Length: 144
Image 1 (cartoon, rainbow, N blue to C red):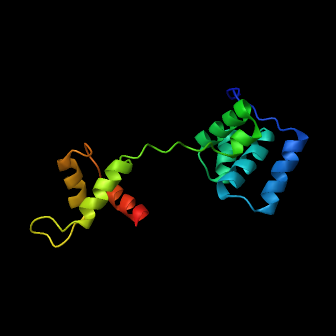
Image 2 (image 1 turned 90 degrees about the vertical axis):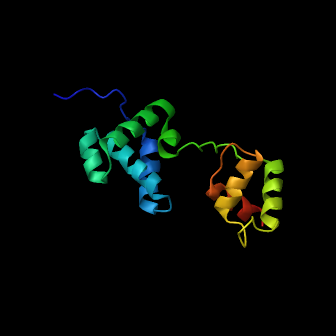
Image 3 (image 1 turned 30 degrees about the horizontal axis):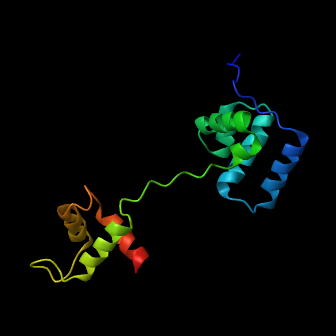
């Protein structure tokens, strides 16, 4: 006898119909499709390991989605919340300084600025404490 599940999935008839329709139409993302199939299989009281094997996913994923369903309902289990973006290292003032430096002549001994040289220059000027060359590239790409 196995351990009793803490979060049991018991779908209503309407939820079961909605999930079945979703899996048959195929107009949703692969992630949502997998989650819909997972909920349908767990509703049949299959063990997490069996569901995981059928869907080729981790048993931890099965447990996680069951928990999301139990705590937040069908929408919470199917779709993820948007993740907040980290604040930008460069505000408007810092971006203006970056553009001014990039438009000026290259540094001593260089024909032109590289992303790493610009990153190092912003640190030298005290504009930022640290910054990557990739952040410089993305910022310049957005402002072009």
